[in-house]
Image 1 (cartoon, one colour):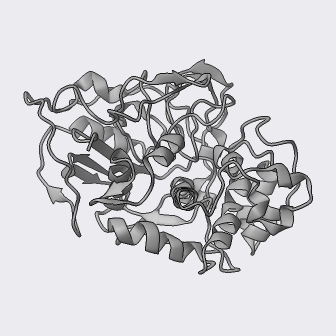
Image 2 (image 1 turned 60 degrees about the vertical axis):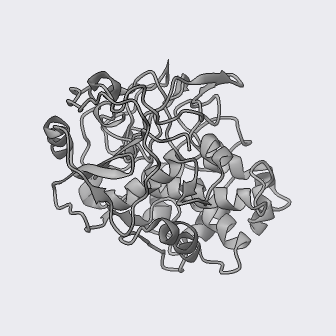
Length: 392
């Protein structure tokens, strides 16, 4: 395996990226994200990469390193927990603000990233054509303007579906059948004409996934194909009043469970010798998916170079900021998985991370300067208010 000297750092924050379903208590605007200090990280003399190790019912534990500065940053910024995994071993965890090792928390837009993995499994199996019309699964779109929408454009947030704050709020707070509402909104523009973090479009993936599995049940699919196989015992997926899984923001989970997702991605979709998700889809999901936003893959935030669009107001901050040329300098919303990756390579006009060698360090452990990960690709489920100190 290539991903041997691998770190996964999983902090779970209360703020949500790209909406989710925040309560009225979440509406207070936050100050804009600011750079924070880099925590001290242990170093090691050995450069020999150990064999890939996977957790059983629980992570093997070997506490090491001084994570006090990181813990202070996360506790201050509203995190409920953090878990640091090194080579398949839990080397640190911490809990604040009501968090606990087996206390699930709402993970908001992390749900989108998990929805993407489920779609990828059916892409791998040939049941879904990533670049084919989503109307193959969404019957209501056949013969209309939405027939041009591809599954890839839904995952890349470039579908052109109608999505504004009013539609978002109605879908989240009012519509009892959130899938029917999302499928039925207007097609504002053609696909791939722009980028918009769109909860309504993300919920249409429930219709895509329902159509390709004989159970017609995304919750069952997730349990059978993802949660069960990698041992996510404290993770659940909520439904709307009509019984539809909430593919835009319905999962509750723990840092220990989400670290399993990070470990799966670091190992190119392989879990204990079984290929749950193809390495090709892992690369596509965690690489910039359009020139409209180099910070976004297929419902996974990245740290690519190019035009960067960050989500701030939907994550609870007072104001958005204008798109800029980057790499991205912060990960807005919720930083859940930080994966240290090799220098990116340029491909197809957008800078994409190298899958080979990803998550491998030149030395056994990262140096303190590695933690900021500003000029390397950052694989993130969701985003974060100040992602610099928690992506390695």
